[in-house]
Length: 111
Image (cartoon, rainbow, N blue to C red):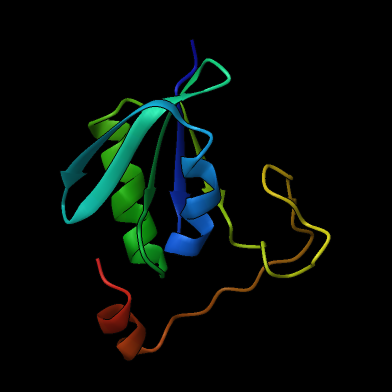
């Protein structure tokens, strides 16, 4: 069975998932709180990793190495772009922009 990993840049983006996870267990690794369980029988491991690509990369590698996930979903990034977007909707971008973040974001939104 495929094991799904979900990363969320913000805790507000993670929150809607938590009520859907059955048999949820919580562990901590690298200052991250990691939630494991199932959604509709599908194994899921999810966490709030903080903003910026470095935090996303660290969280993704932990999910791959420690939790052996097969798929990574970056959830919540487009969530506030359109009020019609609901939890579990899939957004596929047609354009992307590469940018770095301000140093203060790394301090305020660590891990």
